[in-house]
Image 1: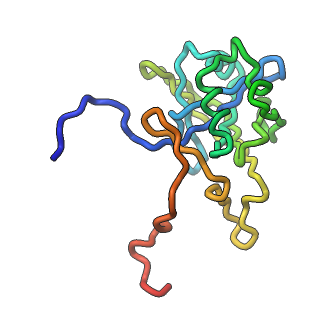
Image 2: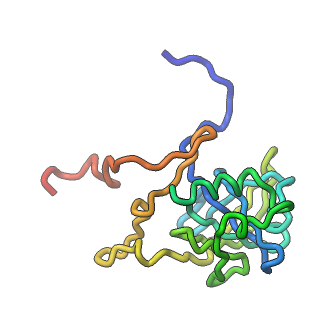
Length: 189
């Protein structure tokens, strides 16, 4: 039986990502974000949504750049810590023993320990209420070479044990249930 439930953002699970920003080591910061996702594949675009009072907000607003760093179960503690501590008070790279690394295009640092870094350039900031959406173009991807299948060229994030966020909790992903199109694929192929 279904019961009425208050309207809210109950689309879970979500990726828990660490977003790095800044244009010099003195102002590098990391913020944990679950409000993120794909907007368009051609051109490649994504978004993050941030509260204006967050320390990273004016940094990204000023520079117009950031990096979405995908997280793993090994990065769970750093992911959580970077979401509950402010860059006003801590150097998050140093505190969590993370390595800032130069990207291909943007000045914002990559997190070297992340298996995939998505370099983004902001094209629009949309005030939406509690959060503002930073609509962004993906300008470069930096992938851990060990996770690229040599025969197909596919990036295998599942081998990195990705981290997901659901209702205030972090989870690893479970067993694969199928591949795109498996429901209509002919038997035996």
